[in-house]
Image (tube, rainbow, N blue to C red; front, top):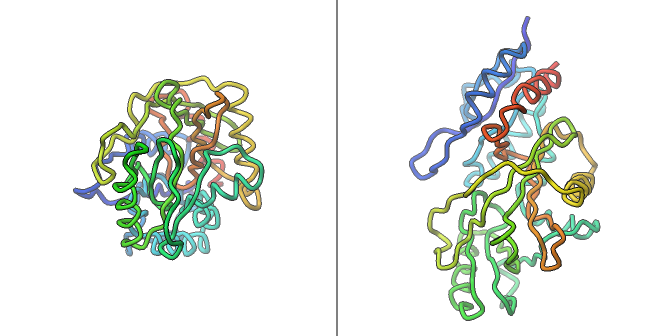
Length: 291
């Protein structure tokens, strides 16, 4: 009997303007590699996840609105079959406070402070800065502020707190406007390919406005320093679990050295449309993992 692989995705919704362009090609490639592959909605109560040899989390992009339900789902699926990435990794990676753990482990990251509703008055950076929720994706509820916009920034933080969210505050990394953001994708524990994209947060864009998550995407050849930092960040994940896939997002600091902006271990865009040569390799690794 052929191996069965489920690729977990989300139900199309009017308020989420996102399409997983890789999903149809990935389903076909996994099937061609020798397994039966099917895209399933992660929140479909009728799916028998135990019938699959592997459940691969892909474009579950609405999970940020249902974090508790999503992490509980991951625990349930992980108890009846193999889940990639594992439920413990999913739970850890849902909240960007993991950046503090990476920094404590000595991994160069974008300097980050956190503010809960009970923390009182928030000290804002002197220069340009960014505010976003610790639980979020696609720059949802993220805003960029100038030094003279502290009142607007505090209103943004109040909005996040009113929704029960923790605010994340970072200095704006100005080199992103010229050198962009790089995303290094790993599969099966090894670097596979990378892309570079432009800055998402343009001046004057409201934090609650729709944003283009991946502007001006192009293929990228990472530097030795970028590769070394990405590997160092992945090695610092608690318990150093076996990850089927991972994406490490990097930007340059003021000194020109790379810093970790985010570690995407749940449902990252893998940019297989930019690197079609990776598709059969990735599909074979998925089938091997299922077996």
